[in-house]
Length: 140
Image (cartoon, rainbow, N blue to C red; front, side, top):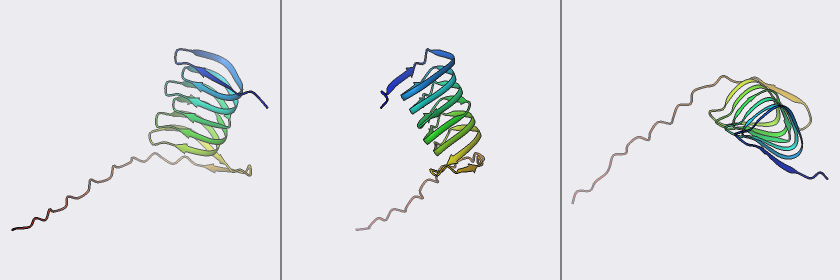
């Protein structure tokens, strides 16, 4: 069994032309260019920037990514995510506000791929305020 390690690349750090691989959790809040290959979890924080590829079991992307992403299970793009590239994942969760420019494939557990076109972004209209009810008063 592998020993798991948690790794953080803080906001002030720039790591260029690198390779991060192993088991555990990797969090990028700074700038990273290269390849991330993790048996575990990858987190791209809101201030993080990745130029390169990610391969992992799960990931949460909240920063800027330009590259390819291969996730075995679940990938979540938060409302602050800005992603350009190819995504392949078992499950894809995209929060309202996330920006995505590229293609994605959802992979079934059986290994068969389902290619999904990226739908155009539609504005979300806020719900209409509830209609005012007339107050009923009793005269005494």
